[in-house]
Image (cartoon, rainbow, N blue to C red; front, side, top):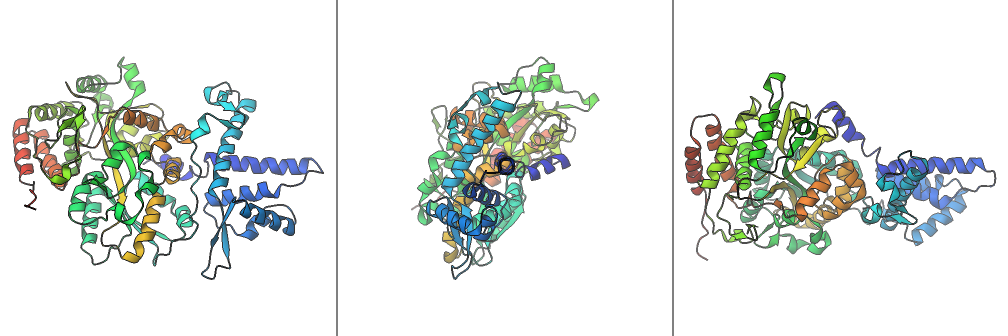
Length: 579
């Protein structure tokens, strides 16, 4: 990521809407109290402001610090503070085992009130002072609220009691932009859960290896682990994850709020084993300005992708038509499965249902490999055609390497996960900044649009010490809550597993990607069947990534690549024994 993008991501919380409004209101209060001699300070307002500001900045607020911010005598402020506690505006949390010392936190009620008020104040300011106040979102203001703030998610709230965990909360994650946002917000989340957080991040292959090593330990080194969606079946069959319905009330997660594909992908045998932490479909990123200059519409089919890539391919000027995952192994293997899906071919013989494919009975293990098919051949030939309009180093391009040149303006289109969008959405110096459109995978003949769902769920290791499970469950709920997800977005994440977060006005202002993904979800284009989470999927992906790489290098023909991949993948399938 460029230096500018990194600075923007780091600074986004400090310049967030709510903090800006808090600073504005504080300055207004100072001006009002000094402008008129008989104007008295409002201690409740000032202490509420201080409590919320401290909460957002992850600073510990004590009764003394709130009273000091009140601008009134100690006795008066102390009385008003007690009234705020009794009214449910301020929560107290014990700081010591004796319970004689407390930290002060804004309650959920207060946070919601301030969040709504902030939106109204901002729109009022636009109505009266902004020269562009006739724009749509300013006109949406009405007294007591606004249509845009009807779905506003308040800031994250601290737990009433701190989690008690020896050595703090230990988390294993993937080293991607969303989880790195969580790391940057560690101090704030430590305040929320009341204990230290120790987070380790690895690349995708090293993450899987570490999770498997951890499962062999007598007692888990981690309280929570993140896992790629396709690993669910393998991790459950190998007894690596606890079923969530045994250790918590799953209804507390509000399952209906998750994008359907992301929530279903966290299940095996009808039981949930993880909570979606990031739902990040792979989309086609395209430069709107370049397509317009070429007189092209956004591509809807694979043929149109090739035509657009051809028209915008200008290697003599250092610009190439399209970028994609083509590095040998895991990276290209994912591309193969997703490209087959573009032509309506799942990698397993999944039953067709309502224009899609049924994944509900995968745990029965009654499936076979379907790579060497006519649709599989079309997918292979499409990848060969893409080579002609790709950068010269395409066969070593993987997750980040395909998006960095797109952000730098060297590639006109790229297949990429939404979690990689910060590379160009947060960098004003990028030629793709503000010029990127988002599409589900354009489809082949006779197939429908699919946005293959990727991302990570967070689960509880099966070998976690029993005395740590309850705290791990509570932290898992916090990390995946709508309030936390909104906070990730405000700090640079471009993934979101929840409908409520995508409907939040501040989230939608952060990026057009959220509205686009929500629309795909409602159209049922978000699907996880392209990478079915069976125990053998990691091996199948690796096989495809090897055989198709040889094909792209010209060492074998597409038909030979299909046959070899089919044979090697079939050898991986293990049939369950008799019950």
